[in-house]
Length: 96
Image (cartoon, rainbow, N blue to C red; front, side):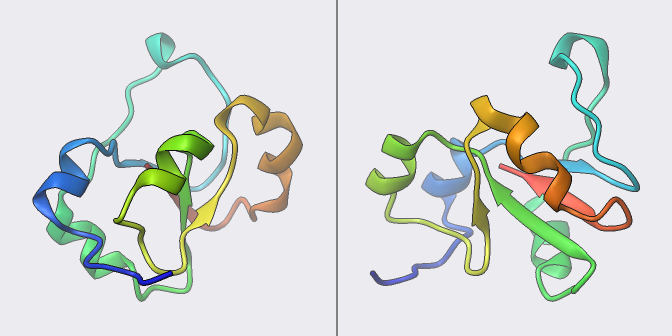
């Protein structure tokens, strides 16, 4: 599988970039304000070892997409309880 430019206009037009810093908390989207990142800021953060990029697209959307961020980890959004604990609370997590 070839990794393409992860910042193509089409790729990011459908992706939601979210950052949760310091700790990982599961809450409904209606109850919290979620900071958003620009493409430029995200590019700067990609090389930081303290940042974990988590792709929460559906399996179907992920497989069909020609655009994937190198070193991103794919997790199922519907099973957050199963995987949330494996990410250190001192890391910055970016979800898309």
